[in-house]
Amino acid sequence: MASALRRRPATVMSTTQAVMLVALAAAADVMGGWAAGLLHVPVFLDTVGTFVAAAVLGPWWGAAAGVGNNVVSVLFNGPSSLPFAVVSIAVALVWGYGLRTFRMGRSAWTLLALNLVVALVAALVSAPIVYLVFGGATGHASDALTLAFEAAGKGLASAVVVSNLVLNAADKLITGYVGLAIVEALPEQDTAGLRLPASSRGGLLAMAALGTALGVMLALVYLALPAGA
Image (cartoon, rainbow, N blue to C red; front, side, top):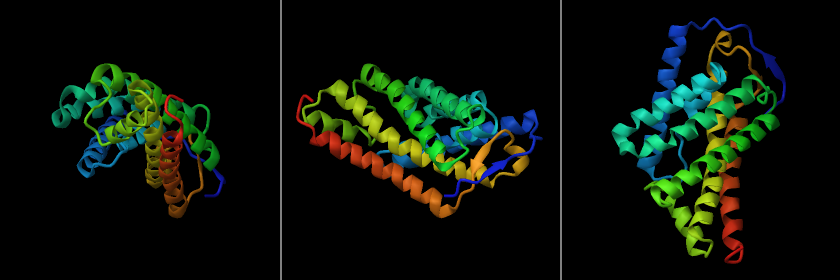
C-alpha cells in the first residue's frame, strides 16, 4: 500500500444525506454482526459501518451509527447487545477523532496504529462488561478463546481481558481496512477532511490478513505462558 496523500475537497453532504448514511452504517453493522454469529467466527464484524460513519461524517455521527446497531440488534440477540453500546461509542470516537482531527489515516502505518488503538480501547471497555454483566461468556464464538485461556490456568478475569485484546486486535484491523475500502469508493465530495493513503485491493486484503494473523499469534503466545503468569 503506497503512502501518497490525497486531500479531499469540501463536503456537500446534507443533513438528510448524513442521517441516511448513519442508518445505512447501522444496518451494515447489524448485518456484519449477524453474519459473524451465523458463521460462528471468533470476530465481531459489527463496526464496519461505525468506521465509515465516523470517518465520513465525524466521531459523534459514528457513535450514533454504533448505538443504532446495538439497539436494532436487540431484535436478533435480545437485550444483551445494549450494554455494549458504550463500546460502540468509544470506538467511534477514537476512529472519528483519529481520522478527522489527528489525520491518522494519512499513511498505511498511521492507520494501522489507529486501528490497534481502537482495538485496545474496545477490549478495555468491553472486558469489564463481559466479566461483570455476563459472567465471562456472552454466547459468542469468541467465548471458546476465553475458555481456552481459563483452562490454561489464567483465571477467568485474566482470560476475559486477554481474549478481548486478542480478538479485538484481529477484528478492528479487519474492520478498519474493510471500512477504508468502502470510504475510498465514496465520491470525493463526501469525504472532506480526510487524508487517506493511496491503496490497492491487494494491500487492503494483506492488512486484514495481518490483523487475523496477529490475533492468532497473540493467542498462541499467551497460551504458551506458564499458568499463573
